[in-house]
Length: 467
Image (cartoon, rainbow, N blue to C red):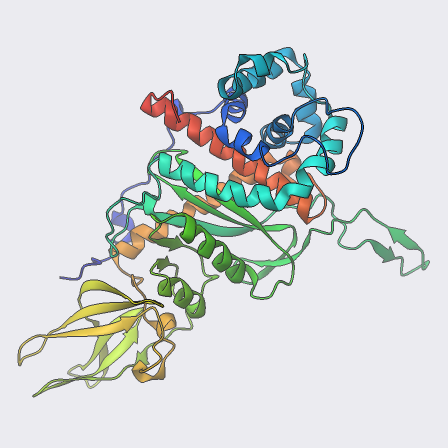
């Protein structure tokens, strides 16, 4: 019996779970969740109350207020709308209650009677937040991983079933292009009739990016997002969002690999990642060598490839790489060849000081008695190569066309859900800032708002008052 199981036909698959009304989040819930989120105050500790070398009167609000403001822009859709709502005593009161829960009633009572204006935000975004953006992103990554672990995701002490990992043990990722804040694709254009030079407000953070398998070019800022999720609705923690410059060497896959390497160091309980077709063999090789799984679709260009045959004392078995796994080529009665997948009895991981190696332990049926063979998959070998093929391109840890792959690949839909949430949070579905640093700050606010709601719902389900 194959450990990965046979794929379930489309018409026989059970329907996906629908969202539950009891997990709905209102705008007031979101405000309270953001203001009560401990991550806000952990990040604020990285921001000095005064810019280096500055003089003059102290700031009207402490730094954590602007961290909250940044996250709330993704609740209200824009900085202008956020500032208007924070002038309301009821909304600002909810924020102060969150401050009191984390820093004490005395700190909350010392805040001004209403929230910051848009002028306060624009001034202090440049003065306090943007100079510390790199530190905020690095600290947030570690805090997000800790939050995920507290919610039962990426548990370092969880069981490790490499052939059939659980949803909460995988990092789900995808790249998304947000609609640019302006339709202009250049700062200047020339009227071909009059020769007039026209100047436009241009977003330097936007560019042309390939989507839908490199078939469509889309203009806008692109970000690669990483998340972990359990089985409950909205039980998702976004771990990081990285800006991808247009024309970056290696594209989305290279940026994703860099992010995954850092996340794997932070999240010891992450068994692997689920991605789309951006990953090819060279990318899967890097992740597999770190002892992690890669689940993504098999590209159509990977046709059958001949492997080194298995030679027994009285038999010879013609082996091929087909659909990400090893198959035996058998000659049928009409003289044509048929590739029969060989059962995998174990997905074996062997580690050394420098790298991790993966093997399929196969059972080869034979009239002279069954054989057991160990074939290296997912990583290329330096000392031997089966038929001189690109091993991670043709032989996969969890082969497509199996029940295990079918289940795991279905989790990638959560990345599309994250992208849709982002589009809904932005005013008119457009990015609300110009330039990569400011746009990255917006994305940090989106991640924090989503994680704050996830934490609040997790506490509501568990009835917890701590954490």
